Length: 291
Image (cartoon, rainbow, N blue to C red; front, side):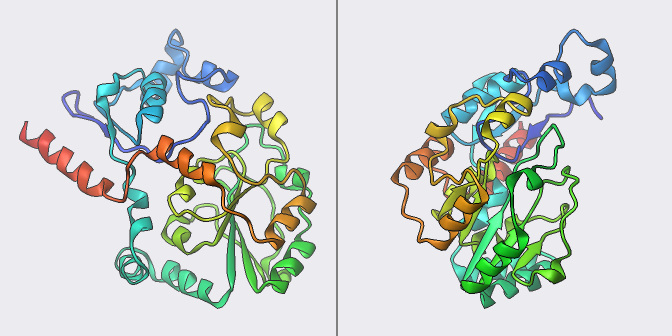
C-alpha cells in the first residue's frame, strides 16, 4: 500500500511454462498487454515490478528477468523456503511437520506409512478447462486394483483452479482425492513416486531424487491450447513417459530405473540449493531493514 515499500517476491516454482512478458500464449499476451489501460487499472499487480525476486539458478533468473521485466541483479538465487524441509532427515522432518502443520495434515502424513508405496498424481492446470481426467482414459477401478496389488496408495491432487468431478473415494480404498485447496508440500518428502505432466512440481520433486513418471497424454493439445513452453519439453523434463493410461499402469507396476539426466536438469534449475532458502531470505530482509 505504500509507494516507498520494498517488494520482495518469494515466488513458488521453476519450470518450462511461459510466464508474464516472457510468453507467446494468447492469454499472457492479453493479460500483460502494456498498452491496455483497462488492465493496468483493474489488475495493477500484473505490472508491478518487484525490487527483488526469488530465483534458483541462472537459467531461471534469465526467465524471470524477462517475465517480470526486472534486471537479473534483482533476482536472488536462494532457492525456495517451502522446500527447505525436503533436506531434513526423517526425525527432523517429523519434528518440523508437528511444529508447523495442523493436526489433520500430520495425521494424514502418518497414515502414509501403512503403505509400501505412495504415488502422487499432480497434473498441471489447463486454461482450456476441459475434462482432461476423462481425456486421459484413467479407469479408477483398474487403478485401485493395481494399487491394492502393490499395497500402494495413489493420491490425486488437482490444481486449486481445476473444477472437475472426481469419484467417491469410498468406492476405491487405495485411491485418495486430496482437497484442491490443500497443500501437499508438507508430505511431498513422504511420497515415493510422482506422476505429473508439465507441472513445476516435477522440478521440486527432483530435489528428492526419486522416480517421476510423465503422464503426457495430451502434450500437443496442451502446447497448442493452454501454455507455451519456453524450453524443449523432452530435453528439460527427462524421464519415463506414459502416453496412455495403460502405459501409466505399466510404468507404475515396474521398477522405474534411475534417470541420470535428471541430476543434470536439477543442477540447471536449482544450482547448489540445499535447503537454506529461508535463512538466506531472512538475512536479505535484515539487510533491507538496515539500509
